[in-house]
Image 1 (tube, rainbow, N blue to C red):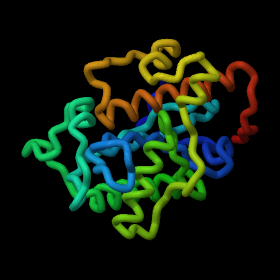
Image 2 (cartoon, rainbow, N blue to C red; image 1 turned 90 degrees about the vertical axis):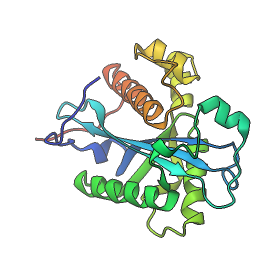
Image 3 (cartoon, helix red, strand yellow; image 1 turned 90 degrees about the horizontal axis):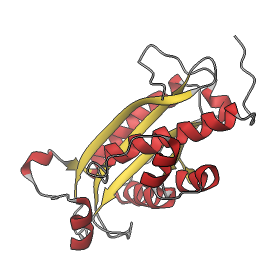
Length: 216
């Protein structure tokens, strides 16, 4: 998988996705209900496209998040992720602070890539989008860089491309290393999902699928 440093400039990334900047998001939560359950981790991985139209991972931003006041925490969810929400070494921040800082970075990336706004990419994306949108409303954040209801779902895309919808199994089919012991960390899952999304997009391009015409 191609990785891009800060000097690499995405070439017409905006044209590939109709003016949208794809940003891979993963949240780890204290349950499955976005309106009542806490976000405990949030991570976002940005992508870049080189001059040959190859999409690759750029950078991951992640935050440990303190449960909002009155948030529900399901013990089964905590057992699944292994997260202790109140561990002193987490260096967690309030969700408003985490989202505002993340959105600040993404708005700059949108400007730098000449895009109109971001589009969320996720594995079972409706889950991550639901929690992000609920937190945005809860924190009364006015400038959400993400499209409010459109997103790319790698569970669906990998079902089409590889016949697998589970992230670990889809990565295995795509030849992407996946460590189950590291899974259910927002940063780790976001990066593997980003690699999977890039692999699918690049595979489509290599098989003769549509790509925009790139000019010098």
